[in-house]
Image (cartoon, rainbow, N blue to C red):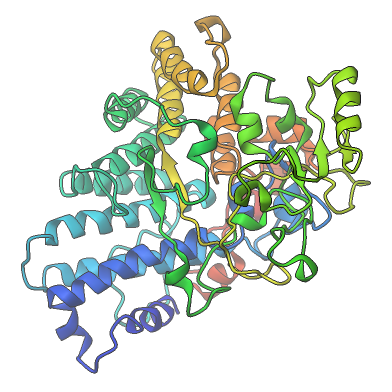
Length: 528
């Protein structure tokens, strides 16, 4: 089944009648196969964001519950809609990578061939890393499947990690060392190796030097570069190619022109209440009213933190996109204002007097709750606004055209801090955190302030919405504690599954279990 779907996709790249084996044996054909590997990142990351973000401390259910089982863990089971999304897309990407590696020793030799092999290994390792974090041990498939295979074994999680690390070490020795231009380079590999070693380091089968290796790889990826781009500028639409980007999924309007609602992505659809629809097309973005920032998220920020106003649309103009399209905001009519926690009553009275037309959302009343379901009710996260996107109608379309940033330098610094803390070097960990905080304009911390919870809070401020949170909480063992403490729809008991096991992995999709003729392939413990 995987082979069929991937073959159809790849054949779209080969518009001639040349036999596939002959075509992929040429440098032109092999390059098209490499490009197909990159393109499949769009399928992995371009669909719904629930498996990346939902069921955490930072995002809550709004008017649209999305997939409530994923959001709350209650009744989560192998047949839950959406639980298969990463499983299927990652295996399809792996099959495309296996195909490319199969042809890599059959294609003609050319100057970039070894680099391309390294890039493919990185992409395959990334897919397996998503799988092992989400589902635990999975099938390790490294051969190109030219004929249908119906039975697969389940490898252990530690075997998957060993494979990922070997793949990435191979990639590190092959890819370019230059600046990021959309292709995997050494910095991207070093960043991913940081995260892989850091994640494995928490596990019982982790290596004794995982944390120290993670710290070393993070520092290599940082390469002495400091964070100099203002946070607002970092997320200005059109600036996704800035020098702090480590790796991203590439999009642009021309590349999705043939199918604007099917080839883009959905990242711009989330993290706010409903802001518009067909009645305001072009004036406001469509939002799903899902993955809305929780009260805990709002309370992470302080008045001096530049990431507050750079992340949220605190003052929403009558035409939403005037924030980007009009240089001087002073004469614009304000539609909605979301009052910060630190605003005094005197300051608020003055604001209301200056903007009598504005709807005022008091602090504490613009986060999701069972009773808050009106339009514009939750504060919009603006980081992923895409003024150039095609209008998505009812929001089901993948309309985003900005690059999805998967890793960037601020993330690398915080991964380094976590690795140094776990490796027993809190002083260096503090230095890495303070680099991030200095760019944000907030005071430095000391070693007495630093623990895993502080790092998770800092990652919440710095990386809000960036598809890391579920993995962060799962990696650090904080998923149950923090989700149940800070998400109004989640109780700790929701995590208890079969035989008292906790739902800290997603279930293996039931369709994968049913199709596999190896009946010894086990389900994750909480779902048996």
